[in-house]
Image (cartoon, rainbow, N blue to C red; front, side):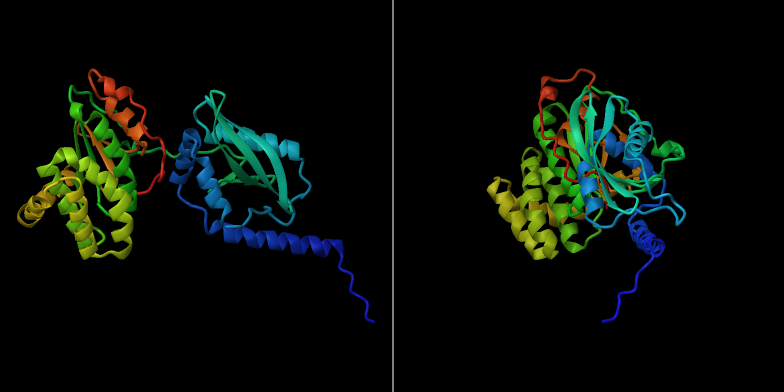
Length: 353
């Protein structure tokens, strides 16, 4: 019987390091390279949306890696915990009322650790999740070198958050494509806000572009015409469109589906579908041209975009509570309806068509 060849511990360690380094190249293909991702990550931590993003990150089932073959693989876990905690709180969490705290730590591979954390704001738990780290690097959607302070790039004036203007009757416009998934998830909470404070404001949805084809162009015209003919019932139509028509016809990309389901929905809401379709035929192109020109005038380039009192907001919270707060802050004297507690579920944290 042949003897098994004994492998030296040095060779075993070299193989392990090579395997870990191979995982690094795999991971880096998923890591955003632009500096704007750093700013986005800071914002994510502050608003407590860490969990979903980290779960997505973890779903790739690849781990970060040792930095080089000469790395000392024995790591003081307590020191690493403090180092990661310090880096998170001093670089990625810019609101000092928000604190990240490391809890359990697992070594998942050679020199690679998964650190579970909680995030508290004013002692209230707002999120939890995990990060990957080695002795030098932290992986949180993007690789950060913990031996170097984070350099936040300067933003130009157009990228900075602008202050909205106040008015007795605020004007709020949501710019979307009707079948843009990001626009759709903003439309539902915007409609909820309109049903809450619509009598105190001027609120509209601007269907400024159809990037998905004829079925989207048709729906843009339908929604523009409903706002022209029966604005009060438009918000119920918009909310139900998000729940029923978008998932059904958006998947088939079928113009006939869009038309049939739209007519059924209008009829169920006592919206005169004949008048709306007459408007689509006679005024649809004209209305969409007006919507497109508005978008150009406001330099709107993405769906969704929010314009309040003639000011385009570069960043806004895409929840009903978030939009209500933004709009109510622009009243000279906010009405009682602004005290309403609306939904705070955030379906899509970012992105645009």
